Length: 492
Image 1: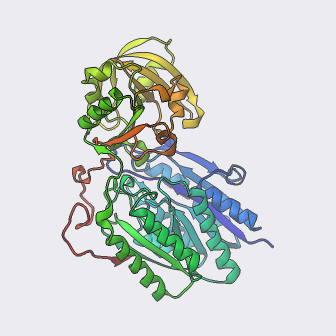
Image 2: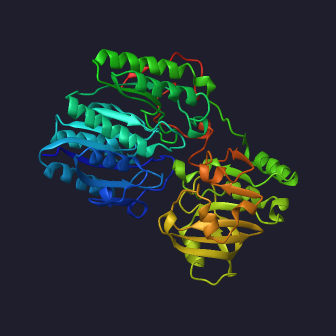
């Protein structure tokens, strides 16, 4: 008789500085056989395929995801959680549970989602083996460690190893069951905030830090998994920070010693983290971009990093666009600067059923986050439109000309890393001289287009200058907000 492994999870990066409540319309859910029949490149797919390939019976529940955004709506979270937990409760003779969780998901009025889910599962199955994959930007909490047997995090940023991490999590389950070995986990909190834009794994110091983890996993038979989980800096939580996490087949002392060793290694590299791509203040970024264009070096891609929806910002902060519209040289540029994109359902609804070339006076942006900028009163002309664009969660897209600047607007909160959104609107993106994206580090799809790229340190809910963010719950001291202190490297 095949051993039964229950699979599922909820997966979200929640920005507490973003006032948007992530609700049912923002969240997509796969249920039941969809998890088995629709194998993709995500961690849940890696779990499912590995278990099936090793002749286990997969009990598939649900996987719910959304583009990073504000905290989740409490009622819809509880509805999905109840659906998941009900499936856990009704299944008998489970051998293990293998989940795909993020680690930095927050819920309105509840707080951390992962610890809440794991605690509820443990009430039903106090002794069952529970293993989960995590995003590299997970924020590890007491509850997560208490109620789960093993975590393994992504080792690549950008996250190109999500499927492989699911495979890793499933293999921990398989080996534990086949050999009768119970994983031993230990985690150490490191008081350090770091953004993804300072911690890509193709460059130092993360490259050698991650290489060290991989080498030890490969050569030490006692180790199931080693992870550096970097936390999520755009969440004001007391647990925020970096975690060194160890899962071994050995005794607790060895796991604890290794976790503390890795924590000290990481802490001692703290001053090596920096913005390694070209990084400038907003006005300077525009000036240098124009200089580059005038020297024949383009396309130039500028990241509007403070309002990055893939880091959970609202994608409707207007400050950088306002600065662009004050620059006459940019407004006269041919072909026009193109800006991807603004989340503004109201503006999309004004244009989506109108003929091309329709011109309207509109208020653009600051419809959701009204604290960090103001709506811009502009005259806009419709250049093109796409209804229900499948590659961006069936969003409606419009391309507007605003005073000589081309601006994409969507009616859903979507990521801005994919140049196919620009192409779908009839634009030959490679021929544009300046491309602005609401993004931080450039994903491979847009990086390949750029002849020069730079990150503008703009404002928003994903502000890269942490000192500008209104932290209230964050435990201090913490680097780099605080510099001269002895670190409290403590076990979680």
